[in-house]
Amino acid sequence: MNVERQLRERISELEEALRQANETVRPSTLMPAEWRLPRSLARLAVAFSRAPGGFLTQAQVVDIVCLPSTISDNPSGYAGVRICHLRKAVSKYEIEILTRWGEGYEMPAASRDVAL
Image 1 (tube, rainbow, N blue to C red):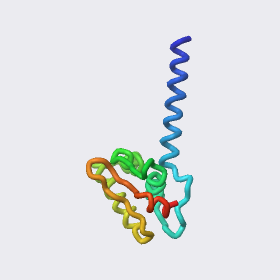
Image 2 (cartoon, helix red, strand yellow; image 1 turned 90 degrees about the vertical axis):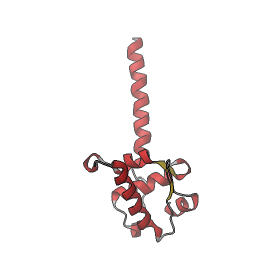
Image 3 (tube, rainbow, N blue to C red; image 1 turned 180 degrees about the horizontal axis):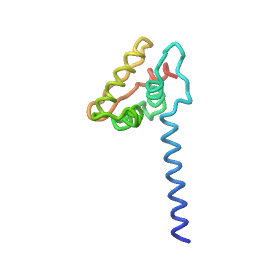
Image 4 (tube, rainbow, N blue to C red; image 1 turned 120 degrees about the vertical axis):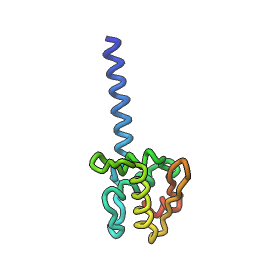
């Protein structure tokens, strides 16, 4: 009985972690239609707007943009390319995405306000 209870608790923990991860990467918030962002870039923009302090680590960006069908030999390089594409797409709306070298990427508060 004790083992069964521990397994049920662990399953609940994992389900909650999955729910939170899905909430971070699924765009339930819609980007303005005039932005014409592809789905992967919209997911990334939403993730920035929801992330604490607008900060995403390199690993988080890789998880968001590297779906199983897009896994390459260099996932962090692919993630960097997608960040570049997002920067270009949203720069005309005065939205910035900053690089924190060795840490990840940040969308400043003023940019997050514009994004949502």
